[in-house]
Length: 309
Image 1 (cartoon, rainbow, N blue to C red):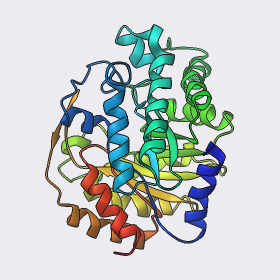
Image 2 (image 1 turned 180 degrees about the vertical axis):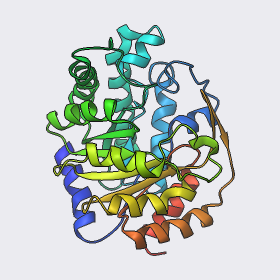
Image 3 (image 1 turned 180 degrees about the horizontal axis):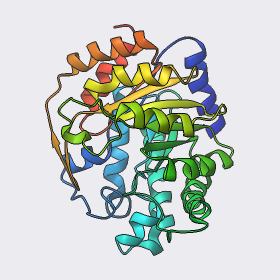
């Protein structure tokens, strides 16, 4: 199935008033299955060394009910790959990731499944450029390199993830929109006063995350997602974003503790996530998925919510 058909199917789900299911975590799932995480490129090296496992995780998410899989390219940008000493394999890593996702769709899907190309806008994953005059243009060019690689490899849309400041967020949005592909804006945040655990580096819901959203929102975005935000903070995040954005709103939160480059899993029963997801749908979310710490069984629970079960 070509990319336009897969995305059109995704749109048809939303147009019919049904809920789209996004996949679960990739990086933390690779770690859970024994893949060492790299200090510079986190889970991106799996695209070079274990692409079959990347494919297998996508397949598991698809069989659990995902309508969208997100490529394992969150840390495959030029900055992380250069720091890991693998700048010369930047294109290979991104292409392998898309191929793994495409092979998973071809192998496991009995329905159209869209492929979203992940591009991170965190300082850890951003392109490396010299500070100073022209900084934004060079950042945009760095993001463009990865967006172009993903587009050429055949993704259906670009998913910007962890947009946590405007310095990186704006050039990332510019680069993604210039591709001509549909673009998702992924915002991450925390509610001040709650034990932050894995969220301690995330911007506060108000005023920081709200200001980032106001600066980076564009009318032609396909969707805005609240992602890599703890499950306890999602409802407040929805209320904040809904005040600024009337279009498609998705959520794919995390749960656990982050200590770079590793993740500590904290138990969240799928039934608990399903109960929360029903609340999120009631607040206006029309896409549901999982980020770090949420696994295949959580995707299956979200599928049940989406199907009204």
